[in-house]
Image 1: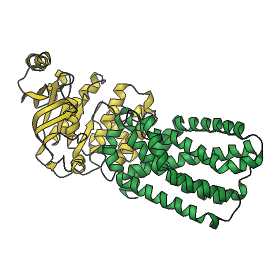
Image 2: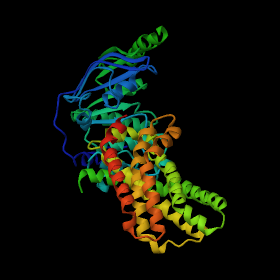
Image 3: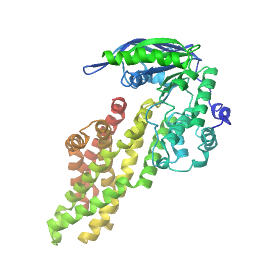
Length: 258
Length: 226
């Protein structure tokens, strides 16, 4: 993947008004039936920063991302996104959010270009074909722009989802396992894109099991265990071995204790 | 075109394009319609008077059964690859999505109804040409109402595990006024009576359409958000 034409894609729309604190989550709780998934999770994230969420399966990473994306209402606690109360006014908060979740939001019977046209129009952005093709070129899908998504591999669908993100105006990116399915070039491109996104004042929360990719792009690392943030610390100076040790102590320890 | 209309249009465009390529619903519905006609043919026999007396009911039975299959699938495509999430996170009035889905369903039903009419004409030796404009009006009003309530209930049940069971259970009682009006108006039209004779039924149909449309537009956002 290359960064060619990225500025052309981005430059077509004006950014929404800035707010320094992109996420202000305080004492978030989420209970599904008898199961407590998140318990007293607080998280702050400023513009121009990224945090990587680590944690064993079932510790609430995806639920936390879905709450931050306003797809799920928290059972308790408060959440402000870019200064907006995201629980009371989710529609307003959504104006600055984009999500790359487990699903790629791809319609199988549409081509790559048609998928982008659909989501860009739904997002209220400029869906000019040249702009869409530039986004596809950025994620190296330009040669298959007119092929149906049904024929794409999981990695290609992931790239298509990332092309959709390029065309939006998000200031807060929420990414759930974004490196899954991507080849080496794709992982490198995504890491570079996240760094440039931060440099432009964007913020991201990235949930992953990929320690090296996660630690490489984030300013902070948080480890979820037992529905709580068991550790949150700056990523700078944190080696991969240190992180693995911390993870084993916290995430795996909580799993063994539960 | 306003942003609202652009969103509604892009949903129609997406659904029609997907259906045109996959033909998943259309193939099933046309095949189902042919089967239904075979059943009717065996049940009624060759006697023309019996066929003509039962025709309005049979037509709408065919349409409603086809609708049950079509409307129930409307939002299933949105569950694939979590596209539903994208629709929820899209900015703006969510009723644009409802109107887009509704228009797609009306178009699909229009194709199925056209096929069914032709098949009825061929199987039973009927001639609709003289009453076609009036019949089209009745079909349009009836289909709009069916699709309005079917699209809404399709969205409500799409996220449920027992959707195949719940969808008809919810839909059928709700479409009783539409079926009453549509069958009676169709009867009047097929008998060659002037449209004024069916005015009361047409008004009932138009009123039901309006009510279901307004309810769909006003409640769709809550349905989508779950």
